[in-house]
Length: 509
Image (tube, rainbow, N blue to C red; front, top):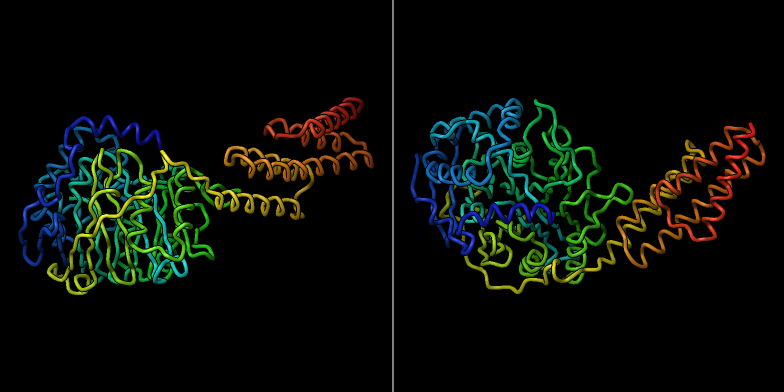
């Protein structure tokens, strides 16, 4: 993620707008287009559209076409549309109604349909996000918060558009995005179900050509689902075009879903967090610096977390130079608190505005959106300058690895060679994920198990001194070298002796 931020910086510094956070209201004109409307409130641009796909597309073109053309020109000047070929390949995967809407928008706004496609597939965002519920929050109500980190922030933050969409025959939803983006990066529907996309650095990079771009799958979630369980089922049923995380939350629970990975659910403490690091398969959690910061900050506020506290946590975990948006959803109240930023003014530490969206979601009337500025909140110390130890992360990782080691040793389908190799691989992974005393304790436990597996193979060689038994012991002993297992000097002498003995038996045979 540091690489992403450093790549983003020269893009952002190419202009001068990063020096201030300009208001979205300055990029949009208030107006009407049939039943649709665009208004500005407290510096935010809010649009409401409704009807059949072609009608929604035409309304968006009439209300935001100028802003769309301006953003496209500036964005593609800084970031050439390299994904265009990929976008064209993904066009076949768009649901028919979403394709017709996007075509109508592009046609009405006077932009090539291919450019509109690029806008909807390029923004898979790098972020931090979390759910806190039950005993974790001050009121017991669930909070779902996220940073939306994506370059160039000096274009995306000030161009933010909050769009209320009421598609014919489907659930109404609000999308927090930009002109031309008809898929959903962050949003909430009429039932209070929320969804957001986060980059998965360890995820699949692309699906088949007929797969659906993830932003449109997330839109479908909001259009047809009422609960996290329904959202999980739909996400699992779709062939999506990327392997990124989708974080969903309703009034009672949350989940992180990614192709090819198990769903992540809140723990007994009511917390669920996500950065962009791959979840460690050996333990089922993230261990990067932002994951540790989220863990420590949320646990420090456990039982007292409110919207202000969530804002403070986001202020300590954004990515430098690309924090275009920050938001805290309250699903039970169908409200969202939103902040916008630019390159050198991260959204999470700027001014925040709360939008009460429930009545507007029910009626489509933007006049029903209650908008108010929030008081300033001191952000948590930023993870870049204030390292968070993440002791709970370490404890969870150690417990997960030891469970995996138990599974290896208890699996009747595995022999001791496979167990030794598996334990050596776990040791290698732990060495990359942990530091300090937690790593030392875990490695001691793993190396003891590995040496025990070697001793069992040695006894098997005593019982039947065959080439096969000698090869199994030699390969198991060599696995400790291949995976750089941190054996003690005594353990290493024993390992080397067993390897030499096994090689001698095999050579004599």
